[in-house]
Amino acid sequence: MSMTRFMTSSEPYQSDSTTVQSLITYFSSGSTASDKPIADQAIINNDSYTDPSIPAPLFDSYNMSRDSIRRHIRQERNALSQAEQNQLALIASRHLLSEIQRVSAKRVALYLAFDGELATNKLIKALWKLDIEVYLPRLHPFAKGHLLFIRYTADTVMINNRFNIAEPKLDVGNIATVEQLDMIVTPLVAFDNKGNRMGMGGGYYDRTLAQVIDNKPLAVGYAHDCQQVSVLPIEYWDVPLSVIITPTKRLAI
Image (cartoon, rainbow, N blue to C red; front, side):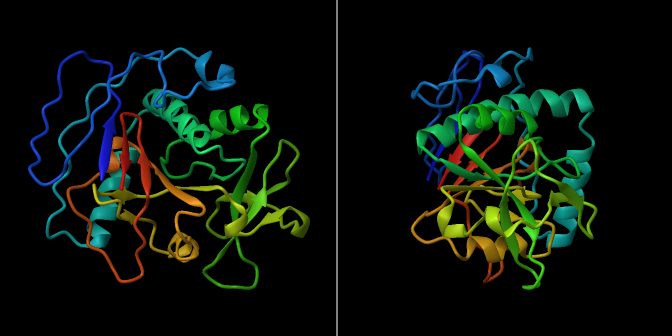
């Protein structure tokens, strides 16, 4: 596993871990998370922001139940002000865009933010400008507990599902199967440094990630730094993520 921590400070980072070898890369506020140049970041980079501070120590989740962890992290995430949400989403979007271009992804499944998740609207607009196809999840109308991925454009008709989450209206002509996608960016509630993720408890993305074979498509978690915990209790159906992007770091498993 390697970890790239995105920070703007020139102070050296000292890892206190003896079991995890981390690769720390520093960058200035104008740089990206990758050495590969980005074709067009105007929509993201034209916004002004201030750099995030170095994240606080991980929340100690040892011996906590999944429900307790989920409840605590959702509270932490929703405690962020709108200004903080906007700033952190902007910074994280730049890093995720770099990751998308690093693997030359042409079909990317994303999500629309809900319940304090990192927003994706500016990233989506940047991907449209780069002619990268964006897909959003919707509840499968026939297979309970499963998702479909529908191509999302500025003209897509959106409806609210039974969880009051906006999703594309069903259009069989714009469906992409999991194997047709190059990257699936998954929302999550909590994660740890082993790539384990915890969702809202419905198992929708667990069933989706079970279809990933040899990192095709690449599964990327996208989350606030406050959503990282020391350890997650895992179940047999849990599928760890290959990469997790936050506003301050890239965690690669």
